[in-house]
Amino acid sequence: MRDRTERMCSFHWDSEASLPPKDKQMTLEIPTGAVQALDLEVFKQEPPIQREQKQAPLNVKVMMNFAPQDANGSALQPLDTRALLSMLRSIAREPRIAKFSVVAYNMQQQKVIYRQEDAPQIDFPALGQAVKALPGHRRSEASGAKT
Image (cartoon, rainbow, N blue to C red; front, side, top):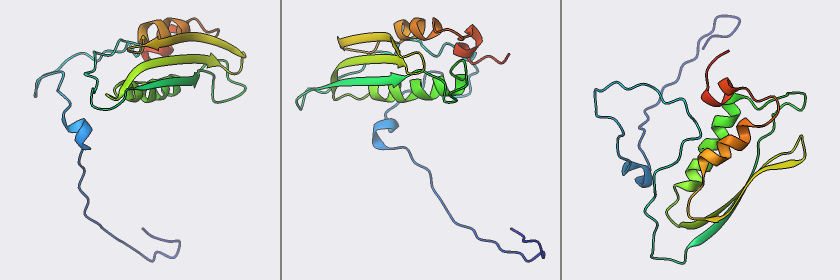
């Protein structure tokens, strides 16, 4: 790094990245060295999860706001949709959870757009249909395609 008078400062460090034990057990969906087309459907169904039987099962209710971050925006940005779904998928993959209730709403419109009660897994395709039906939502936003 240099300042305005061209004085220089530097620093370095060693780091090592590793996956948490929960993620180390992830199976690869495509073989090493293979090339596969990118699946642009963000609302596809999750594969079934082996649920833990050791402890008392958890029942979880998730409430998600599918409204634009910008109060003046007319639609949720694709990046924001993907972030919300990423969080929801992380919750859905938790083996200690036995039942899911999901309430998706749009705070701007002050309405619930999707509701699922006490289900063994989250119905991502049904949630996707509800989100895609929001006013101002374009098909390309759900797929991540650029317009």
